[in-house]
Length: 326
Image 1 (cartoon, rainbow, N blue to C red):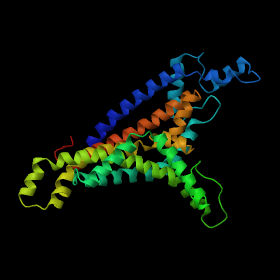
Image 2: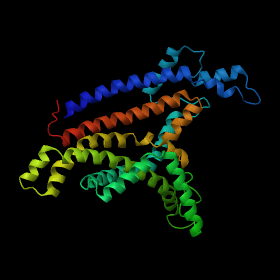
Image 3: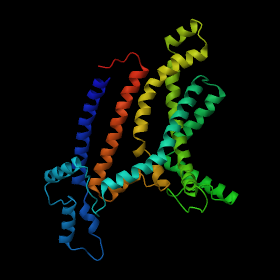
Image 4: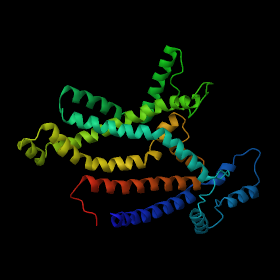
């Protein structure tokens, strides 16, 4: 097992280095941090702009390979550089990572688990009214853009708050006005997390249920399930022991990558609900011409995919006895 993981890890690390390096070259040549200072009033003297860009290794007057080497040696020492305005990229990543974790952990995991359960259940009730109803609702939600779902839920929350004369639903930012009562801060954070978490669960469960239903239908129609039923095995045991386990093999791969990439996978949700997470930071780095920030977000996403790949390989090896670790 350790040898297998080591070989896979080495492959992923090489691919990660190549991807991050290419991202640096692309960002350093296409983004222009100097343009951030062009429209400042009063105008900033060019020599001051150049000095600041050189201080943060962002000057286009310095050869690209020289900038890359300075950046790479800094990364090996834990320094991911600074934005054109002097904000530490490493501090931004470390802070926003935990914001995303608080927002996405429950929503992502609950959405996957609910989706798997619903998909497996509807597969056993193919073409029944319950299956058709859930399928229609799922397709409706899947075909609706995430920002539309988030906006509609906000409108519904406002209606509920107005009807009840309360502020039960809080959905702008991570925190708000904290009351003066025991556990007020915890309650306030829970109120702000409730609505975006429900949106993430809804989006995740609907897409996962469609995937799991199709996989489950393939397993239910397989020869080994029919053979198990012909030998007298009860339908519930045939479904749970044979069909579901087989259908979970590709689901395990999807689940591993979904959990690993959840930090950067909810950009729309973070933007709509004003959560300062990794997804929103990734968009901001591009609009603010932050070369080091773009590369750091790419590297963070790459590490998440690396972890997901390792987890996927391990889960498939556990679920599928035909896989041999070598």
